[in-house]
Amino acid sequence: MARQVPDPAEPVPSPEPTGETTNAPRAQPPEPAAPPAYGTTEPAPAYSAPAPAYGTAEPSPSAYGTAGPSSPPPMYGTVAKDASADRAAVRAFRPRRVLPSVITAVLMTLLGLLVALEVISALLGRPLRLVPYDRILSWATSTPWNDPRVMAGAGLVGLLGLLLVLLSLVPGRPTLIPVRTGDRDLAIGMQRRGFTRSLAHAAEQVQGVEHARVRLRGKAVHVAADSGMRDVRGLADAVREAVNLRITALSPVGKYPVSVSLREK
Image (cartoon, rainbow, N blue to C red; front, side):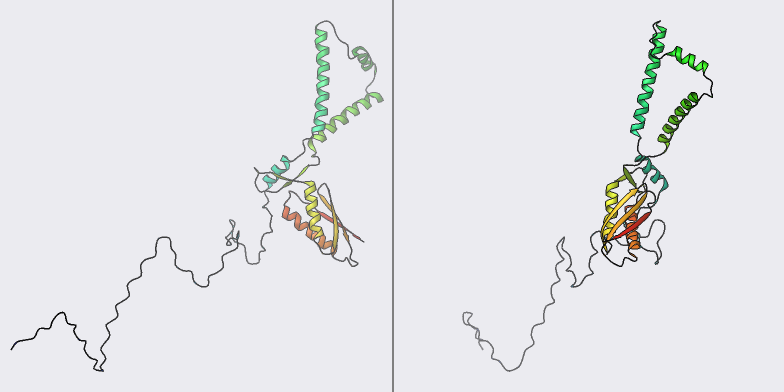
């Protein structure tokens, strides 16, 4: 029995639907995701902790131990006290006593020049006789030690010598106020005018103070404040506290006591 072979050119009829459902082909597993390219980062979560403000740092333990919870934070601008560094700063800005030194040097130079001229001229046989030695010698040999003129001259010479010693030992008025740095190799000075202006500005920040003037006498700070308030009770203490806080922030070497006087308008 012969078998009919279908012509390959004819289209093969599709099977008619029978109403039965056929199983869908099994889904292929998803391909693994490619690794991220070099330099890419994972997407950030929708919420992240805020970054710390610029310049802030996490609290770290101090070199000398951590402070307890009741210890107040250090004030801005305060520097640890170092006695050797304070002495070095004071010496760096101590006045040099230029005027007394120049006067003493000029007098000593003139006296030495006079003595040299008299000695050299006498050795050459032609003394200049700029100083009347004969009359001075005769007066000295004929005048007793308890003579008022001798006592007055000796007292004057002694006072001049004592004055020179005091000028060399007692420090004068410094042109700059040494500021505490904590380092003996670093000396910083502040002008007196800038120091007083800073203290006056601190006093004027107190509520009720319209204008303030600060005078520095040695290391004593005197604040004269003008107020337009009728009741100024406690205002002087507030001004004193504000000025003391500014002095602590500036960290000058030494103590600067503050006195306050109020004037009502």
